[in-house]
Every structure is written in structure tokens, then in C-alpha cells.
Length: 407
Ligand code: OVM
Image 1: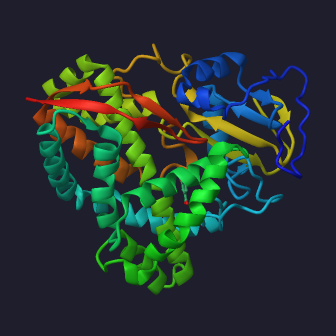
Image 2 (image 1 turned 90 degrees about the vertical axis):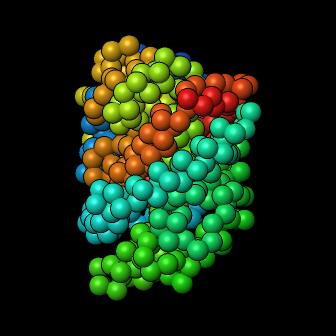
């Protein structure tokens, strides 16, 4: 067992499947679909003795637990570390790692800054940036799509939307990777995150200060909420930190995974080009099929139950969103990528009161890029092997060599 000191050892109730596996093994995380398949097949809830946690993969149970913020709290952390026992690796997020009523107040401020109305004002800037970038990439024989498109595009549009004055692609992308790696157990990925965070976090916190933000971006909207007395000035900086924690590496991963899915399924790219109105459903299918955030946790805040099995207060439960998005009981032929599937209810953005508050802007970024590419690009071809980069919570590419053929 590799328990974090002080964590309670849970005895699995009679009849609950027990699985001797490390769900944070690097090879498993590079190629997680066999694990998703087996987790779903084992049952609605599985005990994993190595970390003394429960794992959920079936759609119905995952969705139910993820939406049940009364029994399964976020304030004890959404990774394997229980904040009630161990010191959090950084000051907790005041929107992610809290429960109502604290959550309700901060969520309202972020939801306003990320509303569909605000996102619509950004669409033209997203499209112009995408067009410029795609034209430059079309002029190259081949390129590394992780750094030069999947990272470059969100970094070119999102920090400016926030109003950030200092932009550093490496720091921004790595900070997100740190946040998600820190959700895992004490393994090499989490240790990398803690080391890298020590280097980056002064820069990140500096970038969240009011004087490092313009007065016309999403960051300014959060500081305006502080001026209005809705939140404190220090809380405004913490909410800007949440933009940077959750808003960069996630969209980088979604875009990289989309490029990968289309490079592997050229017939689906042809269908999108033939009918650009499929851009929105295509994005949802990319999210379902690749689950950029593969795993997210909760803690049982009281004695409760899952699928009829008793669950003790303090139990860590990992919700394997990637598995729920591949559950054959929910999705027909789940391992095929079909852009007209319209996978309503997929779990890529979570569910319930903590469901991704940035999902409108994430979709807006992906839609701008895919729409521009559908006009300009006839084919997205692999120019070498795709390599995945294991992360304790994100399913992302490390390398994606591509060649774009102009239409
Ligand atoms: C935050 C945060 C960090 C990571 C993920 C997330 C998916 C939020 O710092 O608020 O939501």
C-alpha cells in the first residue's frame, strides 16, 4: 500500500470488486482505454487496495457521485490527498476545492466572467488568430502540433482575453500540468509537479495581481466583483489563479486531442469539411472520445453509499471520467470516433455544481480553430508517431508531428 500518511485504511465491504492495480501507472496513462474497459466491466464501484480508494468508471455511478456534492465533497481536495489530514500542496482553490456556501459565492463571479455573452465578444479575435496561425502552418512541410498549435493557439488567445500583460507559454502550460499532476499519489509525476511549481508559482501569482491585468479583460471583471464587495481583493487574485490553473493546459489538451483524433480518422475530417455545422458536435465527440481530464476525485464527507455498498466517511473516490465516456451501457460503439454522435451528457466537463465553469470559452476556442481549419485544410496527416505524456489527471499528448495539406 502507498497511503499518504494518516489516511484511513478502508476495508472493502463484502461483494465489492477489489482490483490490485495502480491507476496512476505511467504506461497505463499513456494508453488508458484498456484500463477504462476493465474498470467498467468490473462493476459500478471498485476497491483499489494500493491507495485504499474507490474507483468509479460506469457512467451511471460516476455521474451520480460526481453530481452529489452533499455526500461527496470537494473541500477535502479533488486529488488523493485529503486536506483534512495532510497539508495541501498549494493554498486551495477557492472555487474548486470548496463546498457550498463558499463555492456558490465564487462560482457566481467566475460564471459571470465566462458567460456565453462574454465569450461571444471574443469569437472574432479567436478566429482571426486561428486563421493567421493555420496559414503559417500550411506554409511549413510538417510541424510539432503540440507546441506549435495545441499550445500556441490557446496561449495566443486566452491570456489576452484575461487581460494578462505578461505571457509565457512554457510557464502557463506547465502550471496547468502541475495542478493536475498534483491530484495524483506521491509518484514521479506528482514530485515533478511540486518541484516545477516551486519554480513557476511566483511568476503565476505575480501575473494574477491587479496591476498585471488590463482593465478590459476577464481578470478585470473578477477585480470589479471585488470592488463591488462580492469578494475580497485577495480572493480576486485567487480566482485569476483558477483561470490559469484550469484554463490553459485543459484547452491545450482538448485541441491537441482533436488534432490527433482527426489525423487518425481522415474520413471524419472529410465529413466536417463537407458540413462545417458539425463543428460543435465534433468538439463534443472529441471531448467524449479523448477525455482531456481523465480522472477527478471526491471525498465522502459522511457515511454514505455507492451502488448499494456502504462507504465510510473519509473515503477517497476517484471518478474516472474517461471510463464513463467509454461505457458501452451508455454509448453505442464507444471506441469509435464519430463526429455526428452528439454525445449529450458526456462527462468531459464533469457534472453538477462543479461542472466546468469555463466550458463556453473552451468550446469557443475549439470551434474557432476547427471552423477555420475546415475551410483551409484538406487533410491533417501524421508526420511521425504521436506520443502521449502521462499525467495524473490529464490525458494529453507530448508529441504530435503533423502535416497540413491546403484545400
Ligand atoms: C482551480 C482549478 C484547478 C484545476 C482544475 C480546476 C477543472 C480548477 O485552481 O480552481 O477545474
